[in-house]
Image 1 (cartoon, helix red, strand yellow):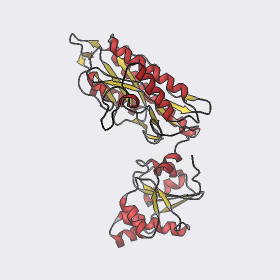
Image 2 (image 1 turned 45 degrees about the horizontal axis):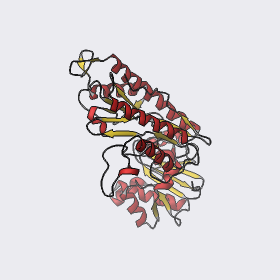
Image 3 (image 1 turned 180 degrees about the horizontal axis):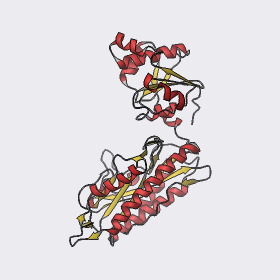
Image 4 (image 1 turned 120 degrees about the horizontal axis):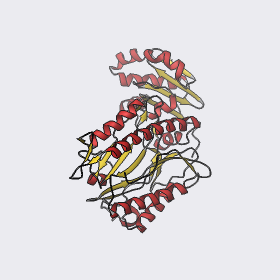
Length: 387
């Protein structure tokens, strides 16, 4: 990755929701702050309400208040809080001597900020790759945060598996738990509640059964049934550290069909091959192609072998092999058709899947840290298909 130490970096955003703002400042706040890096010095500007806490907690060389930057006065003058924050930022950039070089910002920077900064003569340049690369090589501290979130994921999955194990099968194949129909909604509630008890927040947990499992991002609804695949994809954020984790397991209550078992075996084989390839210097594209080749050899369609130009592929292996995880659930690098070499400290998912309309789907996902000589799998949850 390129060295960006000399570039001026600017983020205006709420760190609780903006990963770039939090990563640069090390400070969590629900409202926008200004984070600036000029050469090797970091500046953080916050409201008076956040000033005391920012002085104690932020990873900044200098903490400023909006009062020092005249934000309130500028808001009255410009009749806009957003324009005022950008105008104050322009003043700060002038004060620290960084008005004559390009200022790199994340692509998510608000238009109102960018317009005001440019109107004041600043060269504002969105740079997605730069900000993505800043977060790639995780420190041991960051990895420990992700591991902690992963442990919560596995406890929640264990709870869900226990419910599936205790469930009875009604005459029509519907699962019953505590005498009531077990639905995707009920199982998702149990998973999300367990995550909350462990300090994590989930948004979008997938509990997709039967034909719904043929859609990778279907959250799932309605009764769950025996002999059908049930995909559990759990990817919460720890509310204290702000780091995510991600894991998927696929289960079948009772005996799976021969077709489903074949799908599961193929996905597991491809995942094991991918995990065996991961190490620093390996291109994620090569790992993805290996997964595609294995699944193609097992008789399933893949983008690499079967997609026709201009037509979507709706069955088989229809997504990437993995993605980075950290302060966002999807971040760099991609383990897909993208041309990206892995570096030590990358934390990536490995999640091949197969999807067959009218049958269902199978996905198995682990979370791994890239090392110089291989990878360290952060996932300890077993891979058992039949419940």
